[in-house]
Image (cartoon, rainbow, N blue to C red; front, side, top):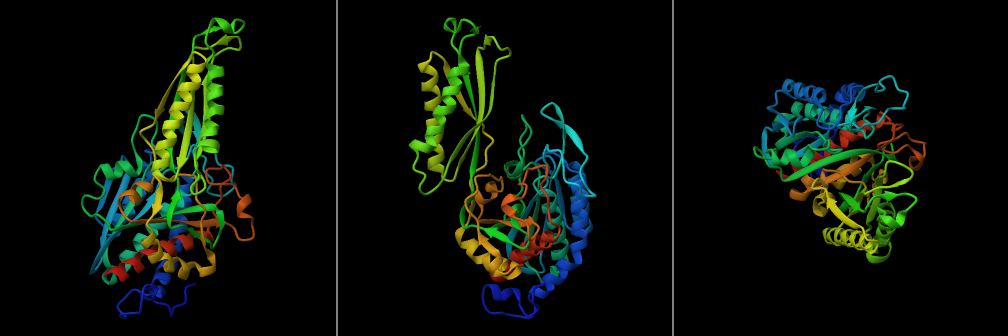
Length: 432
């Protein structure tokens, strides 16, 4: 419980007026919606939907926002929802974002609201699970919308609520996510001067918050390498050109880019081949091998340099054995999640007050990616993490996000709600 003696304005300076929304008011409002948030989260968890298919989720969100009296836009980036709350006092415009999609993962956690949903993914029937916690993100933001509407007259400025589909990536052949919401006019009516978002993580315990100023999460680039050889009988490899051997050498060659060619003393990089596809029979050397990989970087110049090296390494190794290689980078990628340094320092006291200073930690660089990066690429933003592994358990050993055993300790959800709501109100009251 936040001490009632604290007021929100004290985060950024001296208290100015009793008319400001106090920390005690925020805490009371969060407590009032806490049960609703938990129930929404359980409902969403039991009814997960894959990227660009979040129709039930979107309706639940839109119906709630309309009930609150907010003007609502639907259908952005297929299933996205947004709403605008104009406070009773003048002030800046900010945005709060939650992602809505689930993953093609079969749940193995034994909870009463366990997902038994199945769907088609890449032509296969798969289980569907909120294995990354987006169900809690949606429930949090629904609760925060209700909190802020309840204190509308005292609220300075405007809040844009963003409920975004397809953070995990649009299905093959489709567009989606943050970039498509922006492209389709998310910020046409109101453009925020700051965007805030959070993500739950099993890497931290309940009660702990993680942040980092500057680069936080890596840019991600998917790529495909097509290695073309010449088919031959497996017993006569000299009569053809073996793309399997050439592709294998390329895999090994790519490992030297980060380990031997790039200065990673300041920022890391990762090159991984995750799929190797070639051949149909044990005694036939195929014509072609396809490889699929991912590149993770934290710097645009390093990213461009490694891309060139991937292409050069692949084509020259293939050529040395008489094969050829073509490298294609997917146009669908995530930039670096880059937290604005000044804005991060400005809102840090909000996190420290709500969680306790000792429970707010600086996160290491994370090689995972997040399409929140598209907002941060165009508008000063802060993205942070809230721990969901129960206290007393080793968070380092907990099943990670995207695991079929991913588990959210529900008491952690209250901190997510309080922290994001406090960050928003503190910023608005300090900037009016």
